[in-house]
Length: 313
Image (cartoon, rainbow, N blue to C red; front, side, top):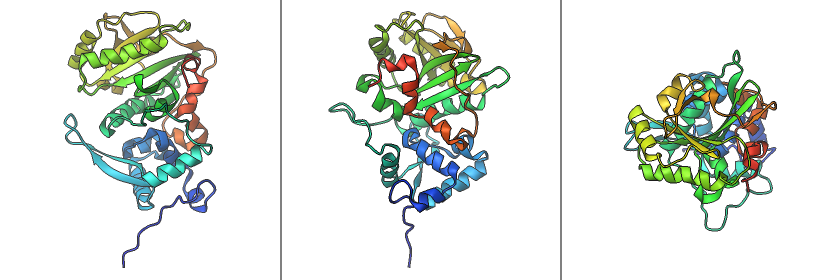
């Protein structure tokens, strides 16, 4: 007779099965409420340290009924990738744990949807590049990363849907950068419409530093095409669009060169800072071993960033 494993999380906070999980597993599961999908490589970077340990722990979580594992592919990535996500019942239970008073509701008619898995994983790769390259000698690194699902509910509604938000610390300065990950499937007009959405939100604000929108593409050829498509964007004071490639970010995201549509070039660490003197701790590999790090990886970051408070719902 075959026995079916019962879900490990059944009754919300405080259940014995939940507290019996290793703390890193719990932190990873809670991150997935808004991080949505994870690979074994990213799980190793965030929580487990070594790939084989991450693979074993993820397999355990699948066996417990907490995660489901699946292959994801599309025409641009036909070889695909293997990823993990919360099962639907566990997501619902963890959401009740995260938001005991209920999630903030979306505007009428708006549905909570996120990008396809391959697109989300490509955006997570940008996160991983920043996390791996933290440089304590230069005092440079990311201090916060907000994934797509967290940005849907708390910011600007259906007309502006960033793929991610990163806060970068450089000495005592903090830089806010919206990430738009392009896989080569969108035409220039669509990308221009995305950048225009940022203008619609931010052109009337009084903040001195411009809003940085970083479009990350796969190849230099695509970067040139995107920049041509954005030539109508002015290098104004309110919003600045920048383009770079994922391979350049993978080498060293903090020294990567970003190009504006008009040809201006700047390194990541040279982007105009949004505030100075109140910088947060650097995130680094294994950050989920510290439960306090979760608040710098979800929607709570929105309330900490002065630039975002004026538009957060």
